[in-house]
Length: 154
Image (cartoon, rainbow, N blue to C red; front, top):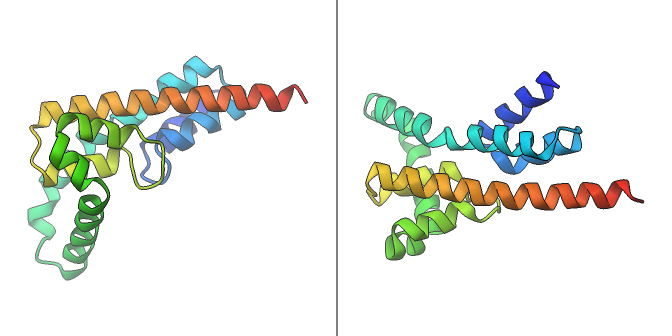
């Protein structure tokens, strides 16, 4: 069980799935849905402070390197294209809804980049991203739990 919870946490903090991958992984491996929600949500919420620290710490140091600059510009353009209109127009609420939608390309990582691009105050951005992650995690828990119940009743 500990191993499954550890994998759930690592999937939830990774940019490749976030809680959208961690929570279903846990539930499908017979972890109680409350534990899956708690571990997946905490892992996904930690994305914002860790990613902002990385942005603050490394951006100026690595900016002279062409590969780093190219990657940052690509991610910023993508975040601006995907989240730009809503976040710029609605600020806090737009950021929260953007993070909340459980689709590829949305989530805490892109939300953090969008908050940084549009210079949303850090506490407000953290609150918006946290609320979005919680709501998204609730969607994932509900859908996965009900789907798992349906599959096991066959």
